[in-house]
Amino acid sequence: MKKRQSMREQDPKIRANNFDEVTLGYTEEEAILEAKRCLHCKNPLCMGGCPVSIDIPGFIKKIAERDFKAAYQVITNRNALPGVTGRVCSQEKQCEGSCIVGIKGEPVAIGNLERFVADWARKNVKEPCELEASCGIKLKHSLEEKESVTHTGDSVSSVKKVAIFGSGPAGLACAGDCAKMGYNVTVFEAWHALGGVLSYGIPIFRLPAEILSSEIEYLKSLGVKFKTNTAIGKTLTLHDLKELGFEAFFVSTGAGAPYSLNIPNEDLSGIYTANDFLTRVTLMNAGNSALVDNPINIGDRALVIGAGDVAMDSARTLRRIGFKTVYIVYRRTEDEVPARHEEMSHAGDEGVIFKFLMTPLEFIGDNAGKLKGVKVAKMVLTDEVDNLGRKMPKQTGESEVIDVDTAVVAIGQSSNPTLAKCLGVTLNKKQHIVIDENMQTSVAGVFAGGDITTGAATVIAAMGAGKAAVRSIVKYLSAK
Ligand SMILES: Cc1cc2nc3c(=O)[nH]c(=O)nc-3n(C[C@H](O)[C@H](O)[C@H](O)COP(=O)(O)OP(=O)(O)OC[C@H]3O[C@@H](n4cnc5c(N)ncnc54)[C@H](O)[C@@H]3O)c2cc1C
Ligand code: SF4
View 1 (cartoon, rainbow, N blue to C red):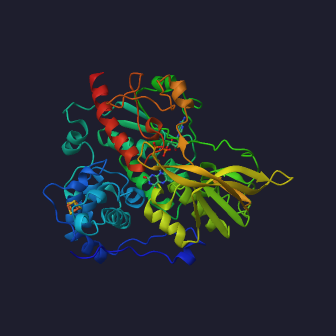
View 2 (cartoon, rainbow, N blue to C red):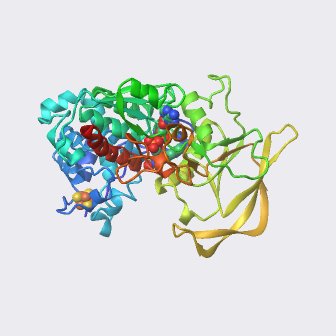
View 3 (tube, rainbow, N blue to C red):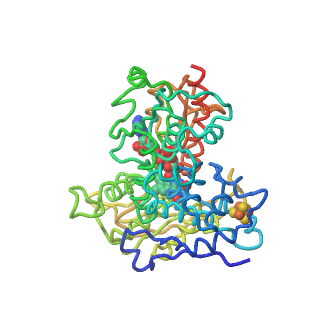
């Protein structure tokens, strides 16, 4: 079996000082060579690992045949955001984790190929109708699409209006499929920017803004309308939307409420939650004091608490805005790190220093209320395991102080219950919206999916939920 094609990257020393994309994508020849590693299995296990059921061998075959336009069509039949998912999905845990080639060697680089196709289409395909003409496939109201979405053959009215709350991946996936079904779809977004975490969380060196905006343009070309600066529950209520003729609703407002550590002095200046820090840098340029009135104070030494993707993004962003020393403190060992392996190794290559088996005890401030250090406890792993099978850490009794002027807390986020409460839908103990197997909430006509129902999860899981909701929305509207 031929070796997997590796992807070129910016040199770590250079990229640690810029916000350009880290990975550089495949050339056409590299993509074709990689596509030829696929065995086109009769029972493609890779597809079982894809929450949106992309025809993986189908699109890879088209790449091997150098028919990139057809490959794009195959992908976008199931996934309206391939440039995004090709970049940020944990393929190693999903499609690539199940690839047959991976049993004896390295799995086919499905994510890299998906990204290649999306990037090729961005440069070479101007309008969806161009695809329609060249591939002979209808994008709107196609029977294939209708069957894949409804499984029922119900008739679809083109005049019914669907409102989607939140423009993250769950909302965008739901919007794309609803538009393909012929509904009149509007996505309402509280922020001025579209994309949810894709635009204000994941940094542009991993997901450049133009990739997201071009995939949103694709949705617009399918007929989806977007209304920004519109917080449902404040700017408009469910009642207002019903008055405006909307008949079905999908709530995809995400998990934007950060957890706090609940340790002393968390209110010192210089301490940020990861959400706040990343949003300020990515959407508001707060890392550049020349551009904004309220910049982040760039010190010398920063510490990030947590070791998920959000923590890696925070640490790598701190390096890029000018911090010379950036630590990641994690209470377990490298083996239990929840972030993608690629993100962790990129962070290490960019100079981020990992401090394992440590947990913060208290923040220490100076007389002016500014952070000057973090007291951390040293930890050891026990034989006891948590519900994910990871060994539980416990304190050894030893501690030390790490001198830092800035800290970013990245220990997870939960659903923000404000909108859910105002819609009157039932919440569970964790404040997530409760849905049944049809994504239906306790209020008729109101469906929900993504992080607001599960807590912080993944882009592709949110997209899968958005797509699944469309089947129920179709049934609901057809029965009205
Ligand atoms: C920094 C960071 C890095 C991540 N990296 C990865 C990664 O590499 N790979 C991966 O798979 N996952 C990653 N994730 C997780 C992933 O981004 C989320 O699981 C996913 O975005 C959830 O999608 P969603 O559509 O449910 O919600 P979100 O993306 O959170 O979108 C919700 C949207 O709803 C809007 N909203 C909220 N309230 C209202 C309201 N009342 N009215 C209107 N709009 C409202 C919000 O402004 C937001 O735009 C990361 C998360 C973060 C924070
Ligand atoms: S499991 Fe791997 S080899 Fe088989 S079809 Fe999927 S990508 Fe190709």
